[in-house]
Image (cartoon, rainbow, N blue to C red; front, top):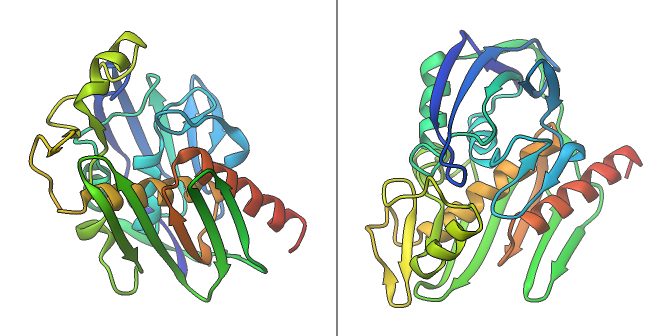
Amino acid sequence: MKQKTISKPFQLSGIGLHSGEETTLLFSPAPPNTGICFIKEEKRIPALVDYIKETQRGTTLDEIAVIEHLLSAAYGLGVDNLEIEVRGGELPALDGSSLPYAEALELAGLIEQNELKNFLILGKPIKVFEGEASLEALPYRGFKVDFVVDFPGAGEQRFSFDPQKVDFKKEIAPARTFGYIEEYEILKAQGLALGASFENALVLGKDGYINTPRFPDELVRHKILDLIGDLALLGRPLLAEVKAIKSGHTLNIELARLLRQAEKAGK
């Protein structure tokens, strides 16, 4: 399989989910083996787990917040090389999913390059856990994710994603970020969720969804979306079977760090 980039530059703007402030992104094609790289105030920041600063309410790379929806779109479409200039702090929430990013990347055109993809091949199982949450990567000749969540008001949801069988753009990318109406004022008091609305988030109450879900199991699909975005920080596509139970960004990043360490150690 050949590496991919976009065929032409494009621009995308929107407000951040937490900051409520506008950010503009300038996307450009990148040469083979560049990987995905953010540029902010002339500083180049590779999209690698080594540069992760925070995992609360999203994944923060250096000073760039909530990168996972964009990275999930790129990973899901097989985009290996991309440069993104960031004019702002938090990446645009857009509709709360990866779909607008995926559509914009496809509109720019995806082109193959003259280098083969460089896969990260897992040599042995790696597992992380905290309380009831766990995340495990197992050796596998492809890539697939099995995810289980259990949220008040929504109950248990389970979804399996195998890109050979399930269309990422149709079944994973549209799943929106979510939260509870009771948390909204608390988050605002903390300076978070300032850009959140019923247009860019799926909102729950104690008795279920308040606004209309795109899928009955939209919560678990979004958790898969987030996991894919966090695993994109490995810098190359992963060959593994990933099993997740109630995992979030912190465990996702912990697993990604261990996978990077195992890769560097040659295991």
